[in-house]
Length: 341
Image 1 (tube, rainbow, N blue to C red):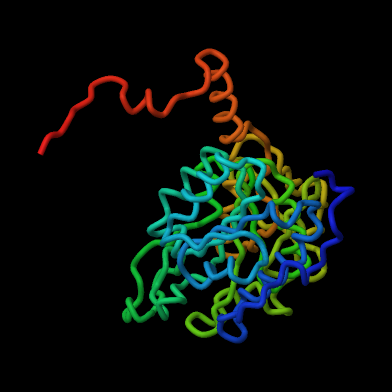
Image 2: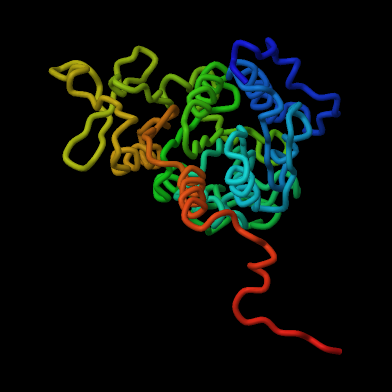
């Protein structure tokens, strides 16, 4: 179907009649609103969209988006979505998951989906807590986090989701924030345009079990000082007066203040298309260092063949040589046994 024949969709076309069962004030509402706003812009028939989720607060998403959907089991959304994309590569498949669902029980599925470069769009809601099960620490909870399951503080070192995705050699890795609506929508558009696996971490607040999870970057007075926006081809500038930046010295990053001989020309210019993950990996660990801002935007975006295309090509070549398969012949090929009772 050509885009010329598509109906003109609006946000309302992607809303459902289901009661939204998230806590009032939850960051999930903002992410849902952004997705429902962006989907109508993509020039894709609504019946071609599929939203696949696992288990968790975020995983109620398929009920609230008026598309096809699949609410799978804990951690297995990437596996189900991969199978769907291989069988129906024409579909626009989005995976919605959380830090517990995708990085704990679903960790293996997540990394293999990314390394294969399946053409899926992944939204990983990171609120640093298990919200659905009422407040246990998650794989992204900070060290010392006191929760119902760690009353004296967790001793686990948390995952860095962006670094994990880059380590799996994901071809598109980005980060946004639930309350940064314009930035979130722009990031979703870029993820949708990417042909391979697109992994988007969305920093999201759980106002019931982990309120103020990202307060240091979401408070209006803190945003400019604690956030650096990654824009391809532009220097890494931040600060209320845009007078701070990130400079590369050897193999290390450092925060510098413009002036006294330091100009924008001395700053690191962002290159999201660098095929080597080392540069993006440096950015991913930047906020872990004292005095450094948290980067948001696209860390990496480059193109390699998609998994489903390689599978389809292989099947096509085999069929040309051997013809279409015969299930009955397959079942009776090789050694067979007859069981008599």
